[in-house]
Every structure is written in C-alpha cells, then in structure tokens.
Image (cartoon, rainbow, N blue to C red; front, side, top):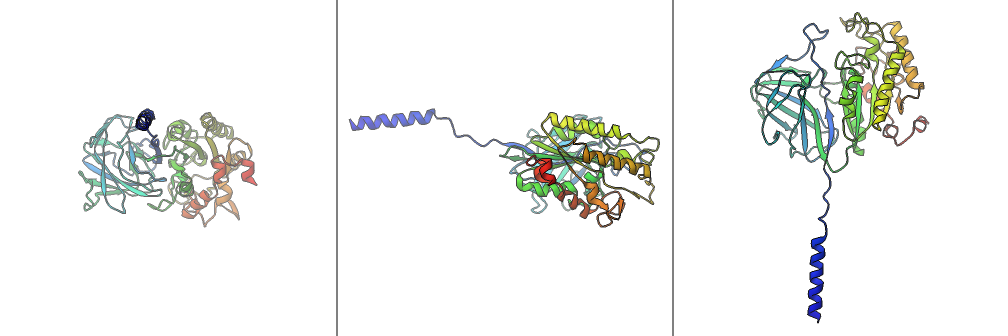
Amino acid sequence: MKQLIASYLLATLVATAAAAPPAATPAEHWQPTWISSPQPVWGEGGVLPLGMPRQLGNATLRQSLRSSLGGERLRLVISNEYGLSPLKVGALAVRRPHDGRTVLVRFRGRDGIAVAPGARVISDAVALAVRAGDRLETELYLSETSAVAGFHWNAQEETQVLPGNAIGRRDLPAAQTLTTRAFVAELRVASSRAPATVVAIGDSITDGNGSSIGRDQRWPDHLARRLAPQGVAVLNAGIAGNRLLRDGWGESALARFGRDVLRHPGLRAVVVLLGTNDIGFPGSPFGPTETPPALDGLTAGFRQLVEQAHARGVRVIAGTVPPFEHALQGTPLEGHYSPQKEALRGALNEWIRTANAFDGIVDFDALLRDPSHPSRLDPALDSGDHLHPGDAGYRRMAEAIDLPALLGERTVAEAAR
C-alpha cells in the first residue's frame, strides 16, 4: 500500500510540474539614450559654411557620442533623412575608447545595408555593455559615394574622416577633422526596465554651442548626469539656428516635434528652450528681409507644442529666453540684438512666467543675466560671444531644473515654494 501511495504522489507531482507554466523571463526594452537630430544641408550661399564635404565615398567617419544610461546590449540607428538617393553603408563598428575593443555592428546579420532616401534603419543588437555616462566611438564605412544626409551641424565633437575602410584601424591618421556629424543618429540600450525618457528641444543653446568640444558640457549633458541614478535618459534634440515658427537651420520646432520628441518610448517630459532665433534672426544676416514675429504668434506656437505633448500625456517645462545684448558683436553675423528685439524678448519671458501654459518653467533668463545689466549675459557665465553660455553657464542651467517637477512628482506650486 505504501508503495502504491508513493507512486501516486510522485506521478501527481510530475504531472503538476509539467502543467505549470515556465518561469517568466524579464521583458527586454530598448531605451534610447542619445540622439542627434538630423537637419537638411544648405546650399553654397549659406551664411555659415557647411563644415563637411557635401559628398563622401570610400571613406570612414569616426564619431563620438555619450550614452546617458547603461545596458548590456546596444543598437545604433543610421539616418538617411533628407537624403535624395540610397545611402550605401559598407560596414559599421562601435567601441568603448577606454578598452579599445572594436565590435562590428550588423544589419539582419550582414555587415552593410542600403538605407532608402529619407529613411532610418536600426542595427541588430550588439553584445557590448555600456554604463551610464560612457563615451563610445562609432566607425561608419561608406563604400560608395553618397551625399551627406542625417546631418547635424553643431556636433560639439571632433569627427574624423579617414580614407577607405578604416574600421578598427587606430593607426591610420585622419584625412580631415570636422566639428559636424552625419548618418549615426541614435543609440539604444537593452534594459529590463520600461523606458523613461526626457527630451530637450531647442536651438544652439540646447545644442551646446560655446561649450568645450568633446567634453559633454551642454546643459542636457549635465541634466543627464542628474537623472541617470533614477534610470531616466535625457535626449538632446537641439539644432543650432532652430526656431519655433520658421524653418531654416532644420525644420521649425513645430514641424519636427513629432519626430524628434514625441516618438521616443517612455517619454515623460520635454524641456523647451526656443525663441532666441525667432526674435534675433529677422533683420540679421540670418534673415535680412524677414519681419519680426508678433508676440501672439510666438505664444500660439508654444501653445501648439503643449497641446501636442499633452495629447500624449507628456509634461512640458519651458525655459525663459536668455539675454543676448551684444550677441556676435564685431563679427559678420552681428545684428541679433536691438532694443525692439529686447522688448519682445522681455514680453515673451513675462508670458512664459505668468500664462500658466506649461507644467513648469525654469527661468534661464534670471539665472544667466548680468545682475547689473539684465539685457546681457553674466560675464562669468558667457562663452565670449554674448549669445551662448560657457561650461559654467550650462552647468548652472541644468542645476536649476527641478527634477520632481520635471517628472511630475511635484506640482508647480510646490516647486515654487
């Protein structure tokens, strides 16, 4: 009898185990941790030089980036946006500079891929661990001549152009060194956590013009360091020369808001710093025949951004426009400032502070202005061109952002107390 009972219990246990569902494995999410917003190239008559050959072929681009969060695997996104013909990628590789190991990046198991005009492609997953704050180098070999696309003018990094297929060839000297970038447009890392993302959208002040080259001193870089312990990525969607209402250096912020901001998974908030060029460009070398925008036009544009964000459940934090008296003074680009433009800047900032149109504000104007001369930057925070902050100013900007208010963990009223 005992033997029969034991046999019955054993059979019951085996049947129960066979019927039990397999143990759940943690879901894998792909978190964006770095982006470079693409913009169209301009013609030969542009106010500023393009800073990059208009065509590249049989050459390797070596470019650097910084990941705001870490993960055990990564993917890269290649952009041929604004390209008019296919982009032929011969090979792509990535490395962490501190250990020097070059890892090939593949597309559907192959070394290269043709990216259709106007399109983006996502690479296969790469078994390369990344930590928050790690700097990576990418090497992109262009096997055939291609027009520059997926282009970003203000990289604040050194991009090396090397002859031929220079993947993994650390011994080869660069044929050319640029401060622009192209084609590599996004980094994603694998995570067991659901994505959590903040995007900064703006002009050259968000893009980091005036900060130290290759030192990751833009204000979104400093914000990323503050948010990394909370597992929140910060993506910099700044484009130098960008405007809220008009195209120019990149499509207007209103036009590109869906692509550069709202499409990112786990988006919790966007920090908007726009208006400097809407106010400063008209009548300057950047917009010699343009008329200044009306305050009502600017405020309506900001309300449109807010409506787009709120429709997706995304918070909007607005920055006031910093002062720019004497901007670019003594250069061929002088003309950004006038007393009339200063009056419009003041009116826009007053609206940002008082209209209750946003989920929060950060008063970059009050933070960066010279206390004794409020229409100009504090000399201690000025990069020297009287338009862009330097490293100290950018750090101060990031430190001024209230993180609980940014992430919706504190109300605007509580943040103000």
